[in-house]
Image (cartoon, rainbow, N blue to C red; front, side):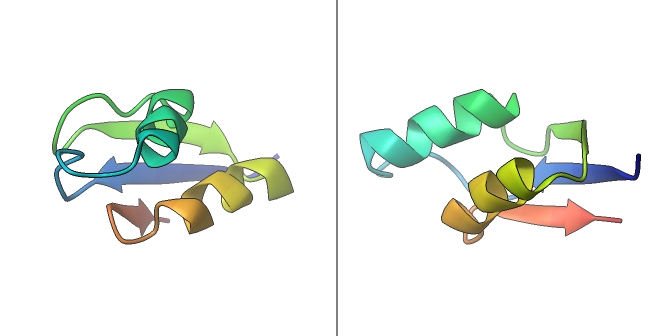
Length: 58
């Protein structure tokens, strides 16, 4: 299965609680942290929810 890398580029301070929980679900806890996930529709949905805080590295 294809892999996708996600990097947190903006701070979670001031974000609503649901967006903070989405970042936690993706494994992003600090700025500039990069995590790798399988490219599935559920992961894409999480990324779309916080797309203003993250960057996708393919």
